[in-house]
Image (cartoon, rainbow, N blue to C red; front, side):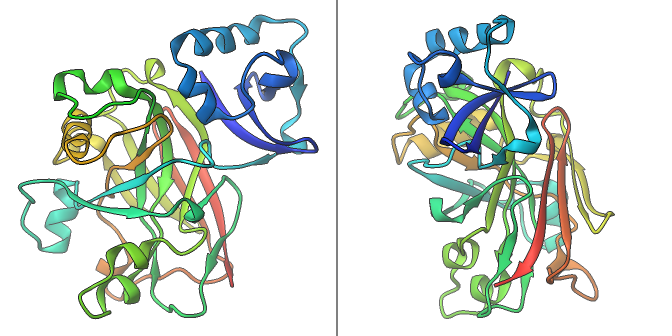
Amino acid sequence: MKLASIKTSKGERAAIFDNGTYIDIQETDPSLPSRVRCILDQGETTLAKIAALKNNPKAVRINPSDVTLLSPITEPNKVICVGLNYKDHAAESGLPVPREPVLFSKFPTALTGHDQPIVLPPVSNKVDYEAELVLVIGTKGRNIKAADAMKHLAGYTIGHDVSARDWQLEKDGKQWMIGKTFDTFAPCGPYLVTRDEIADPHKLNIKLRLNSHTMQDSNTSQFIFTIPEIIAYISQVVTLLPGDLIFTGTPPGVGMARKPPVLLKAGDLCEVEIEGLGILRNPVVMG
C-alpha cells in the first residue's frame, strides 16, 4: 500500500495512492485518522481497514492535479540520519569504513514534499545533493533486538539529504546537523510504501539525477549497516516512535567529491529514484 500526505482545500489529509488517484481516507471513513502518523499510532488493525478502502465503490477519490504532496510524515518526533553507510561511498570519500553507525539529525522543519522546491539559503554557497532510502518507524520500541527490528518498521520512502557543505565541514568543530537541517533540506516522498510491498530492502537500485544527468547510481546491497542493525543501534539510545524517520546514508557520486565539484544552483531539477518506491522530484530555487 502507498500512503501519502496530501494538501487539499480541506487541509492536510492522509490518503492512499491507488490506480492513479488519491483516496481521502477520513473523507471516505470519518472514523479513521486524518494524518499518516496517527494511522501508524493505531497499528495493524487500522492499516487493514485503510487497505480495504481501495475496494470501496464509494471511496472519495481526488485527481492528482488537485493535490499538493507533502512529506508522507509531516510531523515526525525525530528525523535521524546515518552518515557514511555505503561501502562505495566510503571508498569515494577516502574514509575508513566505520565500526558503528555515524549518526546526526535533522529538524522536522527541514521536511518538504514531492515537487516542492529545495530553497538555497543565501548564507551558503556549497549546497550538495544526497539520495537516500528512508525508513519509517511503525511501532514504538526501545532496546530493540536486530532480529525483531523489521517488526517495528512501517515501510519506506525516498529521501534527499540536502547538505550545505560549508556549514557542515568548514565551521569550527564542524556542524553536521546545522549544515543539513536548513528548511527544505529533507525532501521525502512521494509515498510511504508499506513494508510488505518490498521483498528485500537490501537489494534496491538507488539513483539521483541532476537535470536528467545520472550523478549517483548504486544499490542498497552496498549498505555497511543493515536496516535491522541501524534500528537496533539507535534504539539503545532513544525510544523510537511511530512516524520517526531514519535516513540510511547516501551512495557515491555526491557533488563535493567530483572534480570539479558539482553544487546545486537555482534552476536545477533533482530526481531521486529508488526501485519499488518511485521518484522524488524537487526543483531548486534561491531563497
